[in-house]
Image 1 (cartoon, rainbow, N blue to C red):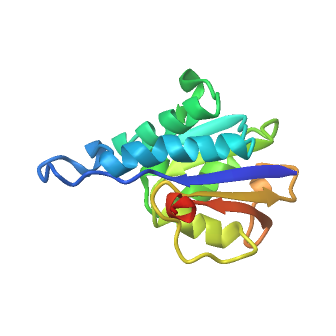
Image 2: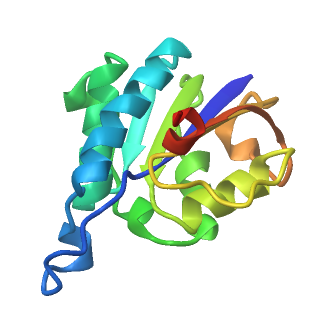
Image 3: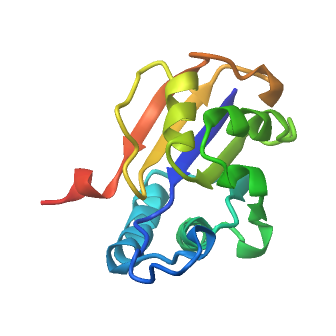
Length: 165
């Protein structure tokens, strides 16, 4: 049995048009939502054995903020260029290469890849994982290489606006 947490980066800023996409930072809402979602995940007792993040500024910042909230050591976050890609087909091998000793893994990345992967492996299709959304699926597998279409059962799907009053 494995758990996979898929997290979309928090809202990013488009203020500096000349800034390369890879370098875009979080905007004000993103800087507010990331710690909020970190606390939501902490209350859900999310405790990944590994966190793999896109190295893009907005994703890496989100990963660090959430990791701090759930007491995951920041120095143990792994940054993987492939997670910066925007297709679930790029993310599948990233998941398949996770060491089988890992029971719970978190990937922090970008749409449409995060959303596409959730819809590929999950038993309940979702329309969209919004910025700073977190999707958790329980996988009835013993090895990460075994992930396949509809192999997982949705455990939770959390996002900031779900908690707005």
